[in-house]
Length: 48
Image (cartoon, rainbow, N blue to C red; front, top):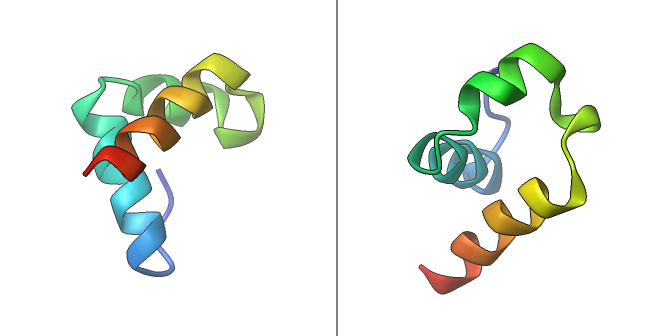
């Protein structure tokens, strides 16, 4: 994953790691993640 730009990016990347999606993001890039994967990350961000 690229260097986080701000606190929101850091949180997004931390949640992606917790959900074990970080390898997929490294391999495919954020722009190629499915809506379901991105939604899972966003859902966990607002829970916390």
